[in-house]
Structures are given as structure tokens and as C-alpha cells.
Amino acid sequence: MKLSLGPSSEQLDACVTCGLCLPHCPTFRITGDEIASPRGRLTAMGAVADGRVEADDTYAGILSYCLQCRACEAACPSLVPFGQMMEGARARLAERRPTTSGRIRRLLVGRLLNMKWLLALLTSGVALIQRLGVMRLLPRRMRLARGLRRQRVFPHSAVGVHDLSPAVPAGTVALLAGCVMDQWFPDVHDATRGVLQIAGYQVDSPETQRCCGALAAHEGAAGNAAAMAARNVAAFDGYDYIVSDAAGCSAHLKDYAHWADGGESVAARTRDITEFVAELIEEGRLPRISRNRGDVAVHDPCHLRHAQRIIDAPRAIVRAAGYNPVDIDPDALCCGAAGLYMVYEPDTAEELGRRKVEQITAAGPKTVVSANPGCEIQLRAHLGRGFKVLHPIELYWQAIDR
Image (cartoon, rainbow, N blue to C red; front, side, top):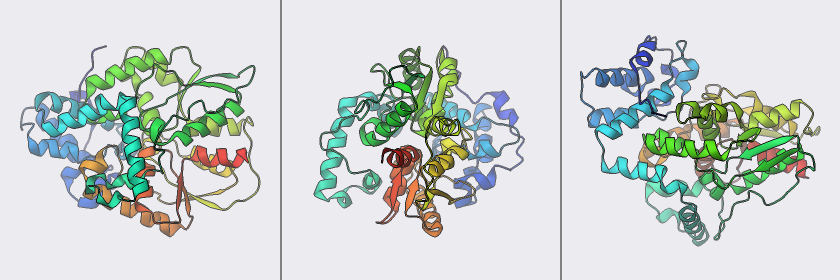
């Protein structure tokens, strides 16, 4: 299919500049600057589209400063598809005005993330750095690696570690292995597989699948994102459900109609693990733990809450595991992770991470659940000792596995 790189005139005209998005935008909350708001960014996109201003360094900086958290979408009465517009604007900018830093970023997310051997080598390097205790010697932009869980020197995927598949499955599930999830968060995959098998599903992780393409789309590498989507459409053919245990990935899979022929089928069958398991618990196909094990703070990843509008499911899972969910932020502002944002905008990412940690600390619980890997890295990097950060499905799996 031919990609339509936006933003289109129809999309730009959909914004009525009402300003309801402003208080929901993290960068506007920090700066108070109109150009750091969704409305300001849309104005800049329109000016470039009309030829009134050049797509110069200033314009590139306006686009780059956006976290793409999509909180503005959830607040917008006109249903402006801001996330898709930002992806299109960045892709068009990459075509018109390629830069060295942009090329490097697009190479990383467009090609290197699909090289499993390279990710395994990088993971082994991180593991050695962790064991040697020299994380503080890394450049500032890379110190967020301290937010990674302790890695194995010789990493391996946990997909397929155990097999609890029923003789007659209730259905088939394709589990998205992903890129960093498979290498850095294998325990989350293991929990996902175990819970779904207990519920009666056959769970596979097709070898022919690729990275979902979300990071490539966010960075303007539209061609790479489309190629990954096309590969995954074929890999996931024939399965009843496609499940992701990373909120950013499930949000992108649900947008596949925009990226590949046959993407509508992937989008229709995709479920984030939190919504899928919450439904299975509600239907009585998965158990509830009745005893009270204490409080757990719930962090809402942007691409779970704002992009997919999934709010109740993580809390239902926490309750089913025997814990009391505690909300930390009624506005659900971004934690500052946002893919590569924590690397190329470290100051803003640091400030947003600090604010989120203050909210968690004020809430009280020492255990925090978050359904996205970038968020977990950010939270672990900023929280002090004594805090534990898990995916909601891990918390539930540990509870029922006992």
C-alpha cells in the first residue's frame, strides 16, 4: 500500500484551536510555551504545509520536543488524530531535510532493533556494566540504563520457557516478542504466556515476526515501519488473537490499517495483555485472590491510557492478584520515557521523571505496576532503593503461581 504522509489539510482543519488540550500536554505544563503545546505544533505543521515557513531547524525542534504521549487526543472534542499527524510530519521532514542525528536515530529504530544478535550483544554489555558497578561512568544520556532490570550476561528469550498448553485450546494467541521486550523483559513474556495458557489458550511466538514498528513510526522512519508491519501481517495470519505485553506496541498494532495491506485484520485481533486478562478474570476463566496483600501504586502508560483508552483493566488485575490499586496521578501525565525521548531530550525527560516519582512517593506503596517497558525503565531509574516496579501481568502471575 502507498503510505499517506501527513498531516493532511483535512486533519489540520479538524483542529478548532479551542485550547482544551493545553493543560493535558506535559511539555506545555513544563514550559508554558504555546509552541510546546499540541495547538502550537499543529499551527507550525500548517504553516509548513502552506509554504509560509520553511521546514528548518526551528521546525525540526518543535516536532522533536513532542513526547507523542497522545494525551491531547484523549482531551480533544474534535478527535484530531494528533499521533498519526506527528508521525507523518516527522516522516515528511526526514524526506525533505535529512540530518546526521536523524539518520542515526532512524537507522537504530528502523533496522538495528530487528537484529536480535546485536540486541543480545548489547544486553550482554549492559549486564557486564551492571555487575562491574560502573553505570555512573556512562554518558549522562545513557545513564537511564540503570533503570533496566539486572540482565543476564548471556541473554535468552523467555518465550517458550514453560508449556502449560491445554490439550484442547480455547483459541490460539500470537504473542508479539518485540525488540527490547524479548531481550530486556523476558519475565514479562513468561508471565504473559503462563497466564494465557492457564486460561486455556495455545500461545505461540512466530519466528518470522519483527519489531512492531512503533519506534520507527515515531521517529519518521515510515518506510521501515511499513515494512515491519507488512512482515507481521503475514506472521500473525491465522491466529485468533494477537497479544502484546507492551502498551506502546499494542497501540501501534491497533493502528496497522494505516501501515500495511491486511493491517485491518491485525488491528481487529490485537489485544493489550491487560485488557485481555481483565476480561478473562471478569468471565471467571482466571482466578481471583481473595486475601488482601496490601497496596500497589498504578502508573498509567500514555499509550495504554491515552492511545487505547484502557484505564480499568490494570486496576482489575491488581485487585484480582489480591492487592489494592492506588492511583498516583489523576491527569496521567507522561513519565518522560517516550521511546528515545529520554536520550535526545534528557532534561525534559528528567524533569517529568522526577515529578512522577514525587507522585509515587506521596502515594505510599513501595510496589508500582506499569504496563510499558520504557515507563518501567524510567521509573526504576528515578525511584530510590526499596521500590519494586513490575508489569501488572507479572504481579498477577506471581500471585496465582504461588
